[in-house]
Image: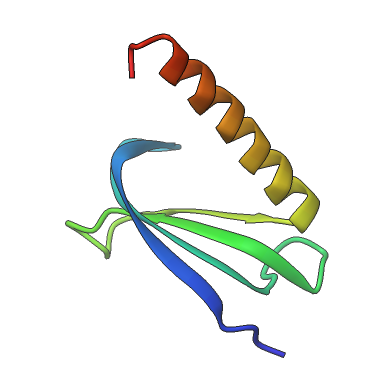
Length: 87
């Protein structure tokens, strides 16, 4: 069954690919049928260059445990970065 759980987040950044670096302007996130990992449903994150949506993109599928671990790791790094006054 499709979950219809999805959101988009505007970003300013870049992503490393086999062919080099590319701009990313949006993360499209959903929880839906997995395409590649062996779980029924997965957290899916697709990083897209909004200036050229036909360009390559970076897609990630994670199980929920890995998604939560990623969220905790991001929060830890962001908290530490903000504490340095460099961000």
